[in-house]
Image 1 (cartoon, each protein chain N blue to C red):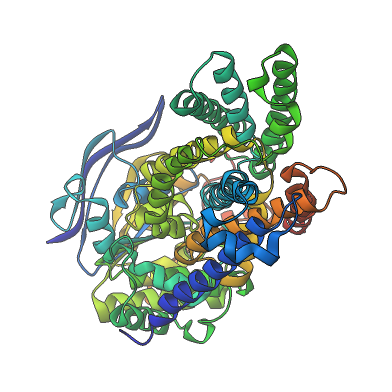
Image 2: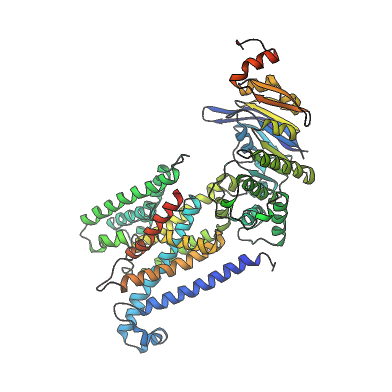
Length: 335
Length: 276
């Protein structure tokens, strides 16, 4: 191995190992803790000797907490990676699926899909995907042109989309008596508690998207230099941008139809890792996947353990962390 | 063999005719400059040569092969471009930026090897930015930044280097530095340099030949003495110019004439009166 290129290899390996460990710890912590009591005293027995225990406790861990932790992990990596892709592609540090309104568009699509009586997969996911792609198109058109306002108009467009979709979601839910439709708060602030073990395999649909994005790490680096420079360095800018946008929108809509709108994950996680690891997407993509998963597992743990009674939507926690960060980044970019 | 052969190229954006019948050949190892007033189509011509846009009609050949016959990656291994506008906020460090120039030579996830690092080091050495290697791009001066972007292009190991106003908004010291480095690159490595520029006096001292564009039309093509004439330049730029000889290199030197000196200018150069 060449001595000088080792640092990147080593950096990737080290960051993956450390983050995988953190993710594992976060997962174990989340499995063992909850309103039904933290079964720490018998935790290892529960993990390793399933059948031999109180079936009640076993069910809580394997039927309730595990799907939830898995959803949190998948949603966290998807949203973090989504933020990373949008920030690179739009060259805007504030871009993120939720802020751009992409998540909102998928939620409206998902709700309409449920209204139409479609199956959870692929029907509702496809409707959510359509919603996210339409929103993406609108946001890009709104932000179009080469005006110096472009950066702000992108965010402004997203904010207005979000306000609109919030209203649409409330309106649609209020029309419905269907218990399947879930509650407004689920859609608006995100909720990881609604997934059942049977639905969990749906989440596998995000894996090929992540793999595709992972392969495009180098073109993403080059895109940071601007479209012309990237093209002159052999990147098929249109194709790469299109593929990245479609893959991202698709995986975000899969997650949104299972978890509702969880904001700011795609802002907080990529920025933390950019600060720690630098701008190379070959480092950032694996870091965001693992770190995003751990981050949302921990946010969800806070959401279900901090309240005195019941739990709060996980979107409350991510917004409490992410919104101030957004404001800070906005302030810094205007200086 | 020619590095570039442009033949009867037309370029239209909708109704707007940006280039009208441009034909020129650029030899290997030549220092070639494209000049002309704003909006004359200089950047469009450079973007055509860079393969970023295609002509509406006519042909562009690079290294004896039609541009269309190259794949993107193949092309990027032979031709490097330094565009005028590069996003200001770039998170990369200087060394990382230059190393990105190796991308067309590497597979999607192939890591940079020893040779790539060596070439990046050489490119930084040539452009004299080696000492800045660990600095972030946003901590550099305009001249340093431009040299880093050119080093990135050199790291691509091109036979042909296309630059769009590389000396724009630089002070004279940095301008001449960039030009000197480009000239050295041409002489020592045989790289063909094609440059769009507004710095007429500067390019006159370096370029072997110039192409003068005026609203998309080829107004002049040849060595500085033939293209940088008072008649051609005044007609193209639409302003009064004083043209004399630069003692450095005995090439034409020009100066736009300010309104307040037009009397002096007319009497001194015996140009027929104000009806001009």
